Length: 148
Image 1 (cartoon, rainbow, N blue to C red):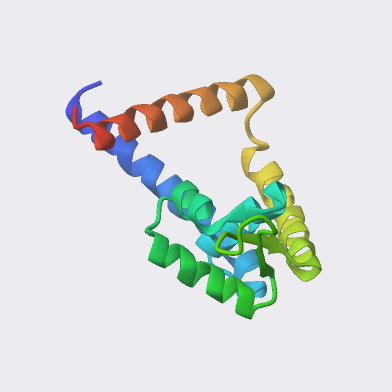
Image 2 (cartoon, rainbow, N blue to C red):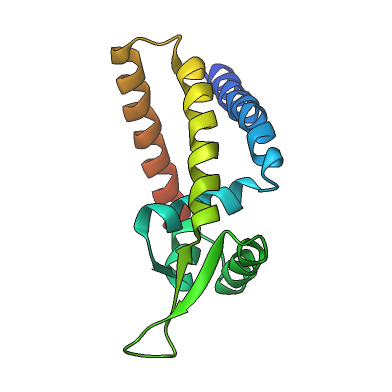
């Protein structure tokens, strides 16, 4: 492919990302969550208990931003802070029952959206797309971490 075609492909991928975000945004707005808040809630629900540092690292945000994010989710009664019994300085984050219900409700909406979104692809195409996106993500991440 020539540079113009590659740039056009890049723009199409960017547009696809924007459109997919537009599809899921109403589900998040309904629950008064941002996509980052949802991702944090997802991490917490799926892992049962996490330290703020782990959440910040996984979401690739600064620790101060992670703390602010956890504060917002706590004010919404979706998560709670629990002190470690071994070391009171260590604080773990757990989902409340309401947080689990919210996550599962949103996840159900997302399942329907994504089944429709990716439904135009057959199983082989879906698997190939997953491999290609993973390969590109890994390469671009390594270029950012260690400039090519």
